[in-house]
Image: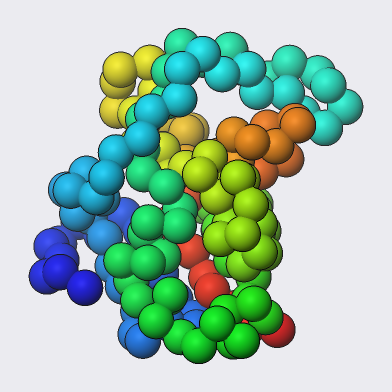
Length: 152
């Protein structure tokens, strides 16, 4: 893991890792960037929530790998769930298999820009979205602050 900026921590990774990892926005922006084009967010019932022109951020799997999560034995990793925690106590939960053994992992993003602007207000500074889900609302987490790797 690279040296991280100690001040202005926006995101903390905890749990089944070599040690806790803390990321400032500058740390996250140094990881490989991914973009989503036009994105429609709907709640599980199908009700429209938001229409976005673009989202920019980093893949959840890349942050987990950077924090050392993938260094554990594969038999242990397959028993893990990844939980994103928002400031409002909302949680988004992923299995190891979803993230690392399916196309869903390529589209689970930690978002720091929306429509070309930094996230702010009730959305940010970080959000989490699972863009490969049928309905994006249930795992669209605002004000992401912690990612927990929990072994079951």
